[in-house]
Length: 331
Image (cartoon, rainbow, N blue to C red; front, top):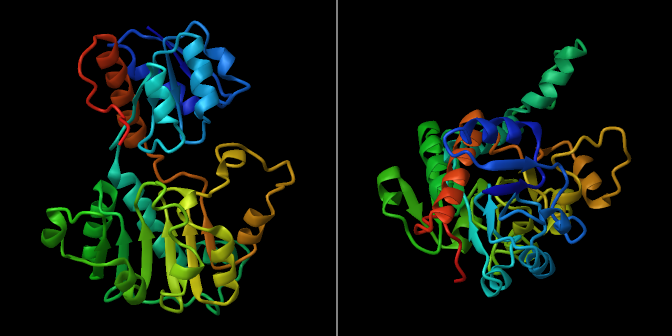
């Protein structure tokens, strides 16, 4: 079976090539992203493997179908970039990796919280320059703080377990209360109460029409003044302009984001020699209480190994006409 990987990097080729040995698929890697201009490259391939910022809208899905593609394999958990309705109408199956390593994202979330709080990134740069002054580096004890987790899937629950070890009070919101919540020590809460009570709010929910710009002017107004906001999920959960205004007014005192709504033109590339044209993103960078990482929360060797293994298992299930355990279906 021939599979074309879009938006691939050297690490993708390394892990997928190693995992492919027992499968024996014909893998082809290209660094170009999938969009309407590059969909033509899929001619002659039965499956394409795509990542978070590839464009798989109605036009692209139809173009893939016209070239004989029968499977879209996402090497990620989210699928908001795929037009599932058009895929189903075109006879294309869609599979994903629902859980590759919840620990990687949860641990990155904690790293962002600790870095923003104790300002270790700023201290590191000071010490390199011989500046050992502590002014401006004061943090707070995480012990005893209230942390609100929006989304209690695997990542949210692992995050809660870690925060439990710090002695935090944990509020949690999801559309349904998971069985583990009480055992972990999560107090299930409505959103308004979570916004009002939390010292730290961390987002772990998928991007859907209902969660688009979940964090906006109206919901920020319900939060404590001085709140810390963390997003390691999807960029469009946050209305960035509203968050910038809240940072200017000092309503939000700390912001940590590993994702950004317009990240497709920025993340996963080396743009150090170019002028970044995104004015909103550059405004975010101007705040000394904002920490941005480039969609790196998933990026551990454990996660990459699991992504490769599960993606290729998904493709093998399709090839052997078995039931697709990780198929994405229209809701």
